[in-house]
Structures are given as C-alpha cells and as structure tokens.
Length: 187
Image (cartoon, rainbow, N blue to C red; front, side, top):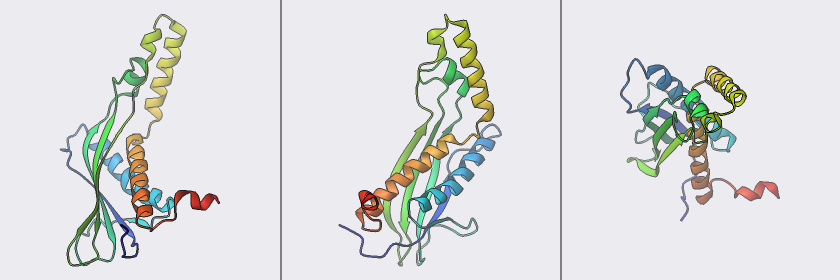
C-alpha cells in the first residue's frame, strides 16, 4: 500500500538519551553534529529533500508541512582503534545505537511512518596479536593503529548510522512511490 499524500521535505533532528559526562561529551557532540549535518546531506544525495531542523523549533509537532526524522542516540561506546588493530576479535570495538522515527507532521495528529533501530560499530577483525611472532608485522600494525586513531575524526559510527538510515528511508520512499525504482535510473 502506498501513501497517497505527496512527499514532503524532511526536517532532521538528532537527540540523545545518553547521560552526558565529562568523558563522553566531546565524542557525543561530534557524533550528534556529524549525524545532523551528514544525514541531511546523505538524504539529499539519495534524492530525498531534507534539511537539519531548527534547534529552537520543537520537532515533531502537529499541523506542520514537513516530515520529521528524529534520531535518538541511545548507546555510544568509543572503543579503541589501537586495541582493535592489535588484539582484534571485537576488543576495542566502538558502538553507536540509535532509535529512528519518521513522523508525518502534516495534519492535526502526528503519524509514525517509520520506526526502527540502527546499530553501527567498528566491526571485528583478527588483530596483529595473532601473528605476534613476527616483530616486523607487529611494528607495522602498531604504527598503523596509532596513526589511524590520531587521524580519526571520531564519527565513523555516525557515518555508518547515516548510511543505514538513508538506505531504510530510500526503501520506504520507493515502496510509497516517492522515489523511482532503484534500477530505473540505469536504463
């Protein structure tokens, strides 16, 4: 069944239910900002009209003219690139879990169009400890891990989350006839 109402612009709001501490505040801020800005841009690239919601505006609200995409960060674990690279097998893994709801604000009552959870993490891989007998390999992996951590912008999980949200939104939009089928552009 497709939605008969025409598509509307999407106001993107990112919130968090993670308790703020001095330790997690910088990473939480980076991920929140990266999700808010990156998600709107990624949706635009997927041909879904979107913009970051005005922080002073309460979103979602009834009698609006847009759709409201509310992303709530519920879990944020920073992990350690150095530990991931050296030990591997899931140790040092970073995690970001968000609950996402797409509301239709057009009308006197809010309507939930989508409601899902996205879990993003840095993944699991074998570390260099497996091949610790090789001191050259250990040195190369150690240097690579330290460099990776130093050059990281700290919001790779936010990027993974945005990608998963865009995928889910595009599927929903296609199902409603708001986007052409995926293979229509390649013909």
